[in-house]
Length: 537
Image (cartoon, rainbow, N blue to C red; front, side, top):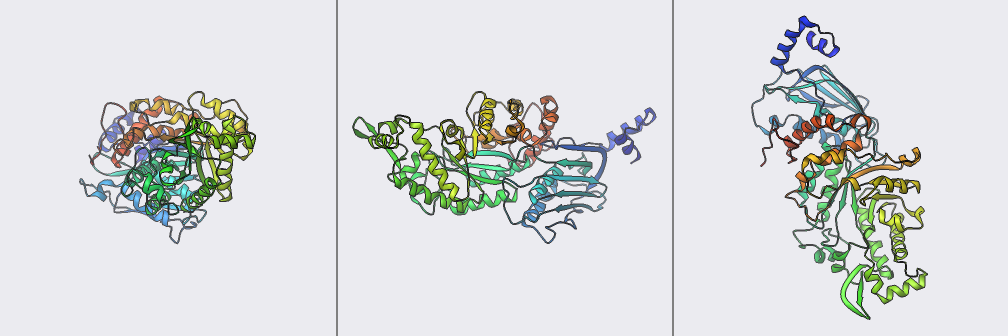
C-alpha cells in the first residue's frame, strides 16, 4: 500500500523502482481512464480496492429522498450488479474472490422522482467519490443517480486472476447538452421490440437520454391505434406480426424510464403518409392527371375539415399513450406536385389568398397541427423545412436541423430567430461505413458558430439518426455502435477536454470492449481483440 501511495502521489524514487515494477507485474496495478463519455472532472489514482460479488452492497443514503425504496433505483441496483460481475451472475468462468470485506455503494438523491418520468428539465448531475471500502454517489434526481451508476460500473475492472477492483476516484459530472437522442425508423423496416429494448440498453451505456421513435412513415404504419385500428390493420407490413400494440409501446416506455430515457414519438405529416391513407379514407390528397383523378395519392389533404378532426383525435390518443411533453410533428420533404394537380386544393389556395405559393399551404396545415398539440400541452418539434417556409415563426418551439451542407449556418439562422435547436445533420449513421470513420462524428462542434451566448443556449442538443431504408434488426446494432458513442461524448463532455481524436481512441476502444462484453455487438475499431469476447454469437 505504501508503494501504491507513492505512485498516486508521485513520491517514488529510483531505489523504489524495481519494487514498484515487481508489484505492477505481479498484481497488475491499473488506473481506469476509459470512462465514456468522459466526465466533466475526473481524478483517479493507482490506489485500488478489491470488490467481491459476495460483499458489494447498494444502499440508499441516509439523506436520500428515495431511502424508503425506489422502483428506478431498485431495478438499477440489480442491473448494475450483473453488469459489474458478469461472470458471477452468468455462472461462466471461475472467480477468485477478494477477502470478502464489504464494499458499500451509497446512493443519495435530493428529490423523490422515483415514480415519474424523465423530462426536458431533469437534472442528470451527479458526484461520485470512491475510497477505501465505499463509494458515495450523490445526485439531485434519480436520473442523475443512474448516470453515476453507469460511471461506477465502468470504473470496475478485473485482473488476470479474476479479481475485481476499483480505484480511488473523484468525479463531478453533468451533461453539456440536455437533449442527447437516438432516432430509430420502424416504418421502412420493422424492428422487433427486443431490438428496440437492446438499443435502449446501449443508449444508457453511452448516456443518451432520448429515444426518438420515428414510428410510422410512407412504407408502413406499425403503430396500433386504439382510436383508428385500421391504420395498422391495413397500413402495416403485416397486421399481426409487424405492429406495435399498446402493450408493446408501454413496454418500451417502461423500459426506457428505468434507464432514464425519454420516449419521443414522431408522427410525420403532411408528407411521408402514404401508409396512413390505406386505413383512413379521404385523408390523403387525390392526385389529378389533367382534369381527372389519376388514382394515386399525395400528402395529407390540408383543405378538408375532416383532416383536422382526424388529427385531433389521433394526437389526443398519442398524447395519452406517450407521457413525454415533447412530440415530433415532422413536416419535411413535402412534394407539392399532387397538391398542384388537385382543383379543390387550388381553389382553396385562391380563397385563402395563398396564390401559387404552396409553402403557405403547408404552413397553414402545420399551424393547425401545432395548435392541436399545443392544446394537449405538448411541445412540438419540427424538421427544419417547416422553419424555412413558416413566416409566423413565433408559433414554432423546437427545430431539428437535418439538411446537408453548412449545419452551423443553419443552427445560427434558427437560433437568431430565437428558437431552440436540435442538431442531427452531422450524425446520420444509416449509411454503411467503416467503423474507423467514428472520428467524423466526434469532431462535430455544435456551438462553433458566430452568435451570442443567448443564441448558443438555444442549442439544446443533438441526436444520431438511424433511418431504415437499409437497416433492420440484422445490422442495426453494429451500424450504430460504437460510432454513435462518438456523438454521445460530444453531447455530454466538455469540448476542450475531448478535442483530440488520438486521445479519445484508446478510451473508445476500451468502451467498445465493454459494450461487447455486455452483449452489444459493436463493430471493432481496429485490428486486435477484447479480453472478453462476445459469447452470444
